[in-house]
Length: 70
Image 1 (spheres, rainbow, N blue to C red):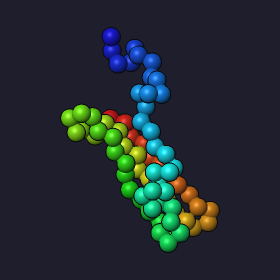
Image 2: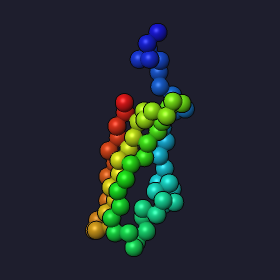
Image 3: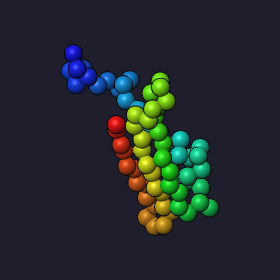
């Protein structure tokens, strides 16, 4: 059975919450602009997925996400 034969469940998915960005200080008014990358790794420490983000306070405030799955 290949990995494509199995249906993906919510438990199999990676999660990213707006509260995480808040905790990291991304949304602070004094920041103005922030960018970075969030990575998920497997048990061997290899990056298996990542989300790049860019946040700008300039009107209108905008959060842009770029998801990569390897």
